[in-house]
Length: 177
Image (cartoon, rainbow, N blue to C red; front, side):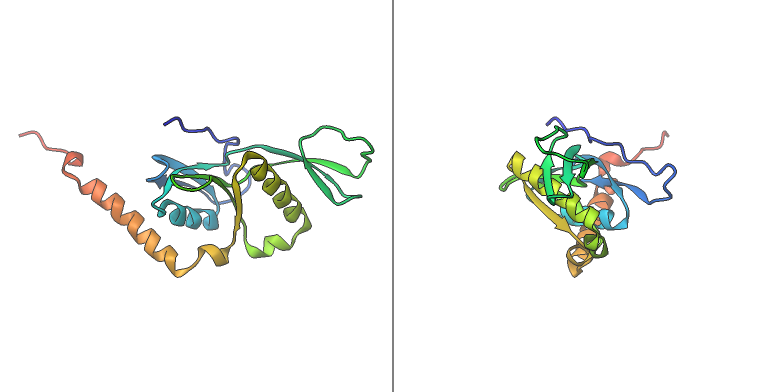
């Protein structure tokens, strides 16, 4: 399986933010997360049996927002009648998950307080339009969706799987006699 490269490299240089590398069983490698809430979400996503791949920062979404008309459209092309109230923006959805038996889903992870900001709501409209244009589902996940009793179980199963892998006989190093 060929893994899609992220559209943006995540780094913590200069921002004093938390960046983690999550060892995913479903992605067959490391998935980068920005923040504790995204990391917790990855435990839940990786715990789903029908997930076949997880990609962080999968797409660069170019969009325009016309504040005079409260209109969002994809791309950066000028439109007829477009005034100075149009802002060109770029955003990167947090994750893409492919499934064995359902449609691919693009996820954006946000704290619920962030959803009150107009700038964030506009960005989410653009991401939803982008996902629909690709034939994907789009979901916004908040701390209320993620930090549930299921999270503790997902974390325990994740750590147990890695303990089993580390203790497997093929991973033991034999000492020379």
